[in-house]
Image (cartoon, rainbow, N blue to C red; front, top):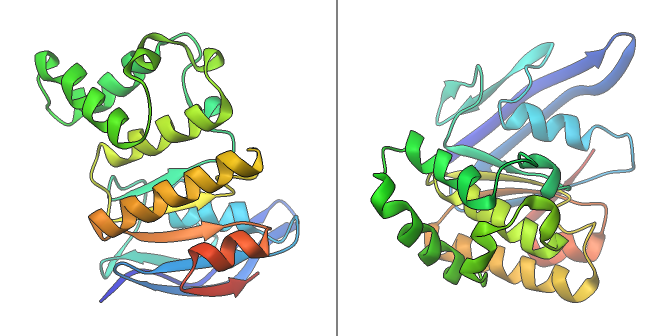
Length: 207
């Protein structure tokens, strides 16, 4: 079943064309790898697919309906996970606010987060820390947990391991594989590393 579709999308910033006439179809449970040289439009494409930006032309559809903005069913994991968290809030405060929007009672949030952290290979003591007090690998796992809190159907992963050392990269990639197998999500996996894309993707598209 087709879950996410980009139909001839283009995006320009002023006179600079970042993405031109790009199309993509993703089925439920599928991982599509997206590769390309620096400046080829990979990150722009990721933000458009996640609903964080609108294309100048073309359309993105989620489950057959036009995507006109951010949708909780589509989550994005960034290359710099620590930078996506509020630096003056603890990890618990940031994640608790997500659960608040989901209607989870405050009394249940710490236990629920502890369970998610255990599944992601994280120690619960990290909940009391600030983003600059955890490692890059820990921050990426926390970002993945945050995305999973809203039960997404699609995850857009923009160079999620490029800033990590090789051993941590492998751990994160296997975690993502396990999460996908358990939840049946679709991934758009963006990377400049052919070996990483080959490991993760069912098929690969070059920009």
